[in-house]
Length: 441
Image 1 (tube, one colour):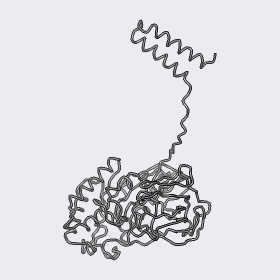
Image 2 (tube, helix red, strand yellow):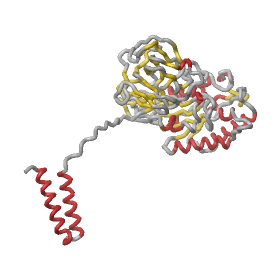
Image 3 (cartoon, helix red, strand yellow):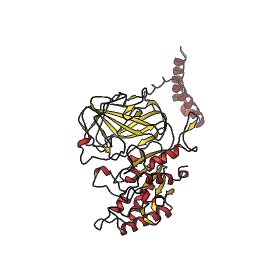
Image 4 (tube, rainbow, N blue to C red):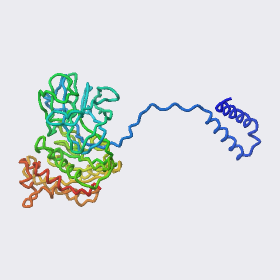
């Protein structure tokens, strides 16, 4: 008789004896014998089949991200048919594994991606030799994303340094309208002639674009914390130089990569530094949706997607509200109490997920098209609450960093892009340099 058969037989005999004599035993003796029988039976049972589920144990950190919006009012140039789109993004964190997130969240029809690839950008639309990786989705080369949904690629090994540029190539085999995109990429992207060129290091370029269709995030396995910047066109970098990475968030990211102090996993003897994920949308508002679909849903409406879904998010910087103030009217007035209530919602929802919330004061805007003295008074009231209300975990005073000391309701002329609302490159640099790094420690 084998050991297993012996144990089964012993368990059966013990159970039979217990049935006959259980009434004559004391409660303590009864519990002891019953436990012994259960132990013997458990040992005798055949092992449970192993699960086939593969769990990814990487600690993902957002390295780049944008906020999807759409659909464009005029999508004529944003329609692709049997073409490859190569998109360039700057990573704010490095790692040894990478994955991407695609979005059809604003689309009304299924989005078909025939093939996708990622590689280190060499120059222009070219990918550095030996760095191209064909991406898969659930083990398949392509993916069809339902309307309203995102899709994550499978992770792939690729060594990427912080502040490097990567090229993400998407092959769109059928006529596809870019119903989900980020309209102010401020970065050249490349559209091929007909064909799948996802795995080609160099591609012919039929036209360039300055939007990011479908791509919304790139993650790496660095394990460090991510800082999400939630905002409008001033966070989006409107009127900064194209292809120069001159947004205030870019300046902040470069500063963070240059610091010695950081948090996160230790990889190759170094700690992962915080990354900065730009979730600004030009025209975006805190309280309401803009009539322009490219301005996206309100910050409150997109919070879960653009903040909570960011891999590794630990800090949130809130710089939004100037479009609510500027578009306030007698028919639909916005008050300081309205804006404060909106900020409080963001604070509460972030803290529920253990995310620290940093408030940023609203920049001066006298001279902008929608300026008025009454709206300036509203901005001042909101800024006073942000500075002194004590409800944010920390405050960044962008107003103080960019205003003209001789006329505080205006941007400093050196920082003004010319429309009296958006900074230029020097203004964005001043904003990025004004962020106290200790607020992220």
